[in-house]
Image 1 (cartoon, rainbow, N blue to C red):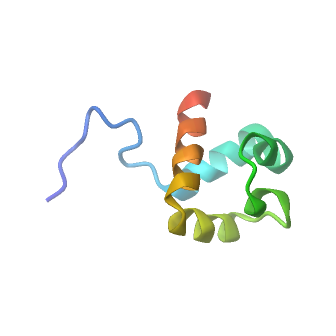
Image 2: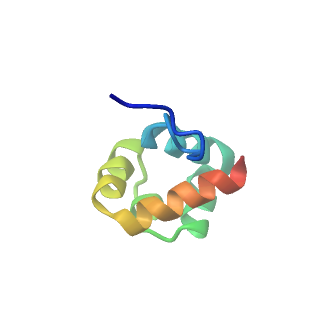
Length: 71
């Protein structure tokens, strides 16, 4: 059974929600400048970015850190 994680600010927030927030906040161009990965710079889409971020822990970590900075 999952219990709340009060010390984890990302608890309950999906990667898709994080990515949508960052795209709304920065836009794809600025997001690609801040985190220089191909899925943000060449034909960006939420779907392709989610696939990449789920397979690439270092990139996901950068996205999560940037999300926390924007809050």
